[in-house]
Length: 171
Ligand SMILES: [Zn+2]
Image 1 (tube, rainbow, N blue to C red):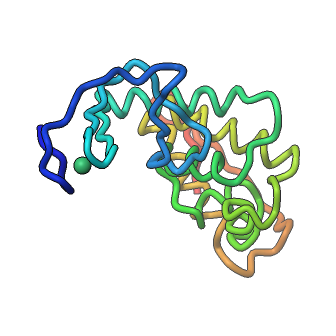
Image 2: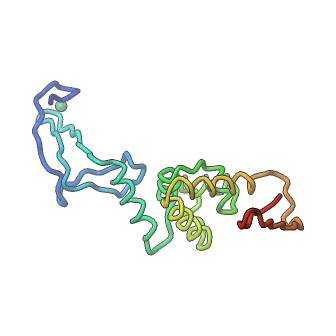
Image 3: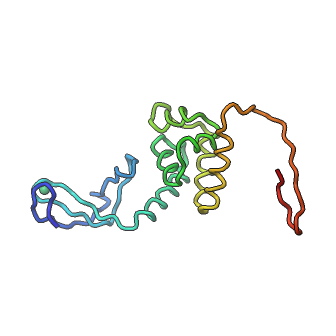
């Protein structure tokens, strides 16, 4: 493998704890990878990492974020939201905040979501991890919650219908 810039043959090294690969491409500024192969150019010092199993890597990273003992910062929330496949508008609706507020937090203009929304964001990310079906339900809820001009508390009746031995929510 040759360097893109100087066409020199690159050397191989393993990323170590002392000299890790900073994974800025994740959108997180404090994630480092260790144990992967790096191709290093002896001329310009340019480095090209070999990152296998990226989906698994992002999954492990998301789990670490969900378990973080302190409030998530903006880039951590953005990573979780994107990793679980939520558009900003829908994620904000699920958290009960405005898209503008979510954007301010994700961009670092506001330091965090506050305790309740922070915990809710983690819960949503955890549920979405359970698979596509859980994610779909959350997106449907988001769609309903995002409908504009909805009264804060509209009275509503619920009809439950027994149909062929199974209960169903009826419209
Ligand atoms: Zn080079």
